[in-house]
Image (cartoon, rainbow, N blue to C red):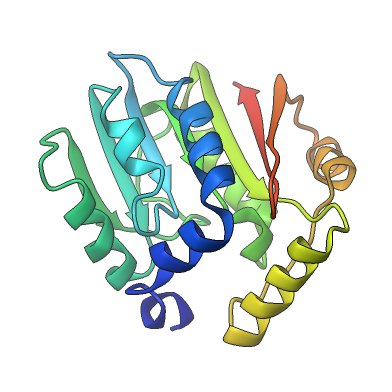
Length: 198
């Protein structure tokens, strides 16, 4: 699996190429989290978002479908007792309805064959009145963003969708979701977070 193969170098590549954007968007997401929140993070990868989220919440369940990415995330959060890590499929989550106060799925929606199923699951496990936060990389036709997308596809990332800010917003409208807020971290490969209140 591609994500297991690159787990050892993922942070280096992300921080070297797009560190400013990643820090900005992770801080934005963490600022949506409250001290009493029970949070689910899907596609946590190596823990780029897990660490700042865990520092703010009561409990974080961080999931991914690549066990070696989870291994890296565990190392990053080893001193935080409020985090548990689990293998999970974002399109078929093994959690009860309305379990979590906040649900985060970062930088994954563009990789999915069936993003509609993932969205349905994310909304299902979020409590009424809670929020679902979905950051994803967007391609605003900059040379660096286009080159990065091509590079990751050559390595085997297999992007299913390439969004601009406008098409990302249209993506949610077509599925019938009212997004409360969009926030974009600008940089080499911008990242746009959609915040949806259930």
